[in-house]
Image (cartoon, rainbow, N blue to C red):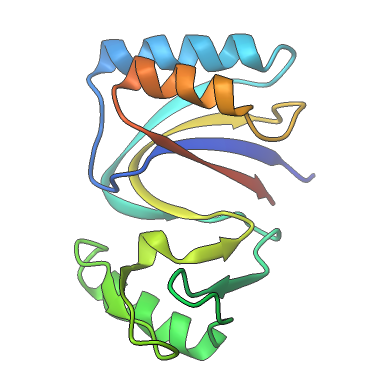
Length: 150
């Protein structure tokens, strides 16, 4: 059986809110996704790659928009994984831009996070810009969204 997830994460990979703030944000997202499955606040022991599942298509450079080779990206991911994603900095091969793996342009967005609000089968796609601002305000940090399909 396939599953869709709307995953809301902070833009800072190692940031996590306290439990009360996470619960308040989960309530707001739950109201934005009526009829969805559970909204779960997940805290990981370390920074984790929040992937889009089968939606993953490609990665490009935020500096020059060049499509990055999959082998290069996998090598960067292997190196970052060796640090438990504590070190995400890299230099792109196309234009030598110094970037974080978190800031590459993922075609179907992806992110790195130690905390996420996960909506199971949300019955919708992205939060609107206004809804994203509302969640960001509750959390006290800007957010990213990842739509995952498994």
